[in-house]
Length: 350
Image (cartoon, rainbow, N blue to C red; front, side, top):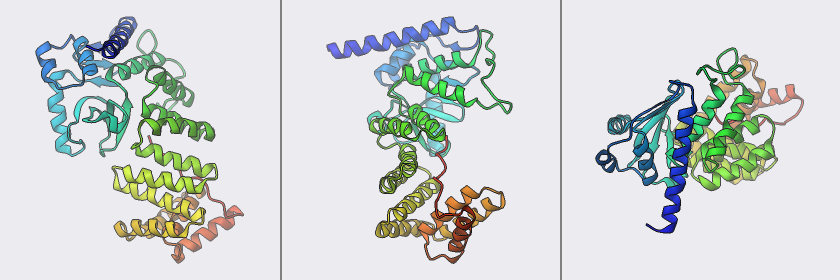
């Protein structure tokens, strides 16, 4: 074993020791850890070395009120087969756990995705969650300590009247997560989104640069970067970011919507050739997309959501600038606003 490999193994063992300490200190029954995996079964599992080290300590783990579940090894094969049948996995993926409705997957090529543990949504959208299973679990145990008191109940002030996390608590959880896994792209993306929504646009840009450096194929990071650059007055940069994000989107509907954002940014930049090319690409797969945007804009207007209606009208004009319905709608909305300005596109979901 080389010196670098020994140092890496010792670092993993230290993280596993910290997990064990937190499991011991947690309220009784809040977390449930399995016994060590059998060596023979562990050898057959085909997991990366660091993940094998985790299973050598605990063959499965449940955190909080099943907020996170790491499957025991004997459940990994069946879970992987089910997800393969649903068509949401890539070749070589192994499903090792879940968080809510998302699956935790060990991808075949973590370097490509920017993470060793990837969350996969029901749509097949992928989120680079953690640089190792051990770091991801340690981060969730640390976040659990923020959420739950010594009796295993939610702490006061954690959730609002409708059961949603308070914004200040969400920000605290994100930073706590990154304390334990600072190179994890998806949690840092969520922090960037939180900063953006709070109006801290330049801070969001800094966080997104780190995300994209570590996970250059992370579609939602590129999309949010486009929104940030729009807000900062860089439509050319926004167009490029949106177009890159669309190229990596798993959901075709979201990819088309992101291309529409790119077309609007190109139009704002005065780049007619690029706008026309993007519009052509959209209409080649969705011939009725301009009509869809017009209908959606009117629906938002009827609900009293003028900013959303204005944005949809802007997107529609970028896709079909000669569409009379969209042109009339846009002029009407701009007149009510008293200017020709457009609000930024809504922040990316999740």
